[in-house]
Length: 84
Image 1 (cartoon, rainbow, N blue to C red):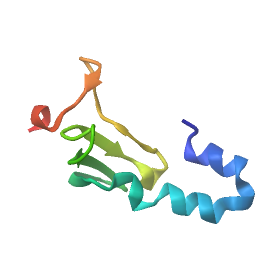
Image 2: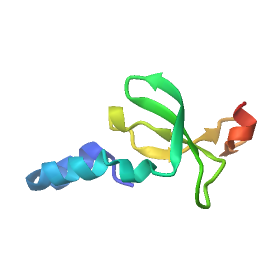
Image 3: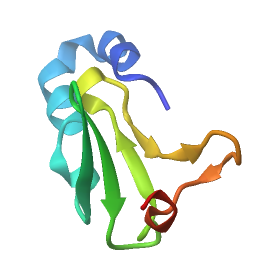
Image 4: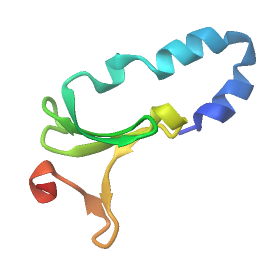
């Protein structure tokens, strides 16, 4: 995965298209926000598809990307049922 700021430099002539795609809601369809961390960072609960029940982090507001949430000590994905 290329961080957004690196992708900006690589695709400098296509910034509008890149930005629209990066911030598109298509990347989070089938999920709901259950925790707003502030500064554009969210925890999402995936409701549909193979990731249903898992927690994802959406840090696009700070150009941090979207990725599944990992339990720091156990090094495994976090399901919603382990969060609540």
